[in-house]
Length: 365
Image (tube, rainbow, N blue to C red):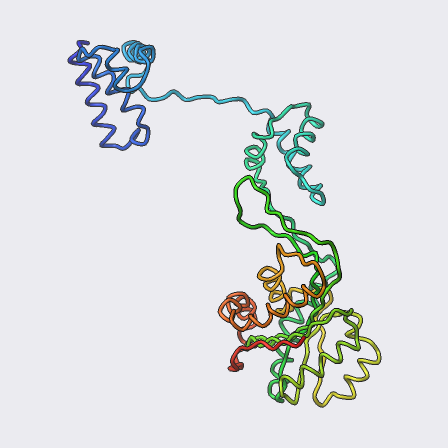
């Protein structure tokens, strides 16, 4: 085959590649073909190498490969790649060990030791994530599962009990609130945050100086929140006082509180007091171990994220003032609160349909 015939053949390959799209994503094939065309057009190899920024040795290898008929299209050869360190059986055993021992934290260094112990294979920490992803595993945060929760009671509550409560009580003129308590430590809580790369985000920690507690009531649908702050431990006596304050602030004749199963909520004398005031007060209790059924829990998480994460206070008084200021600003966050509570409103959409009252926040120190 003459040089002119080779040039025609190479140009034909380029046209075919452009037309069919095969190899169009691999620019290296086009470079090889153009390099060969330049060579057969009698261009000096040194000039070709300088133009395409490759070595003369590489060009000579491509010429030899083409003229020997080893690869007329100059496509890359299929490569075997590096053999896997663990065979299929060992990979399955590794995955089984991780899945069966999921009550512990698995990080890279632990798994390197595990692989070495089980299979006597030294594996790189950098290669390990690639192997684990191939096995269908990922690095993610663990979640808690309340093993004592009763699935049947939870189903009955959400599908039967709660709709009946709303339908009956609303017809009788009752207002329904979800109630809960939350605590805030002066030491604060730490969370992920954006910061300068390579620099730790250091939060000044003054140690523990106490805890501020808050009792709150949230009316789903209206978005109305009422909170009472105290530095004392929450008990049945303070819970009764909170109920009385709530009635006064709401200016309503009938209140129904949906609470969790905290022991002070069911104190004997408190139960008797509620019974003696049943004309305006009712208590309903969530299924045991079902905090996810209380919409106010989502509100607590939002408050901690917005106002207390990555904060520490030097005294209980400073924490108290910070929380008071935060709660006074909450009415300004009405749009954010709507977004926060959107899932809860969607879950209870039919229940909340009757509410048309404007959202507001009431706070009492």
